[in-house]
Amino acid sequence: MKKFALLTPALVLAAAAAATAAVHIVGGGTPNSNNTYPFWGNYPAFRWQTMWFQSELGEAGPVTKVEWQIWSNSAGGLGGTFPNCKVLLCHTGIKAITANFKNNYGGNTPVTVFSGTYVLPPSSANQWMTVVAPTNFTFNNRDNLLIEVSWTGGSGGINPFKCRNSGPPPFPGRVYNSSSATAETGNVSANMHRYGRITIGPSGVAPTSLGRVKALYK
Image 1 (tube, rainbow, N blue to C red):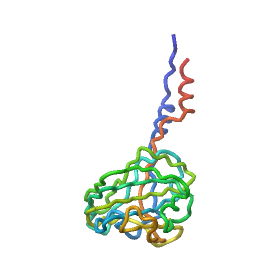
Image 2 (image 1 turned 30 degrees about the horizontal axis):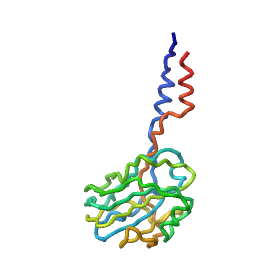
Image 3 (image 1 turned 135 degrees about the vertical axis):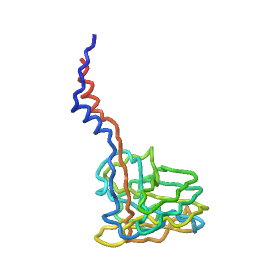
Image 4 (image 1 turned 60 degrees about the vertical axis):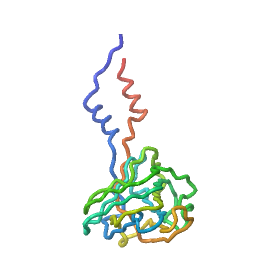
């Protein structure tokens, strides 16, 4: 008959910690401005990219949530509906966003983490908005993390998301095209850093942890 050793409280806590998601604040420091892109329905179509530096995350694992915060000096965001929307995540080794959308992938293949009609609800000042909750992208903690949003035929008003456009460098920048969701190039804003929260994990129990648990069975 097999004998089972009891799990100690320390091991239980260690296993729980391994399954805890980590929330990383990104944006290069305290936000000092706001920007409505990419969710502003005044345009017929949109393609937009920005990125965050590896140093802002510092952890490998599945990206499970990307959030942006509404500007504090506003009544909030009006929300909107954005058909034919795609949200992509991509590893990239570039140091700053350029005018060429494809080149910004840095030779990597982006992953579609949302496709369909995107509905952004109305919001209030300082509210955190979930932009996307991926289930199929794992950050490698070696490259920078690029996000792309595109849509056609959107409707909706101003959604002022917090960002940083002055202060100490570096800035990743952004690129946008407000007339085509498939444009090859766009307009670059070099001094732009989108403020947000990125959740990585839970990553589950590592194989080494399973080995330790297995060793308790005699």
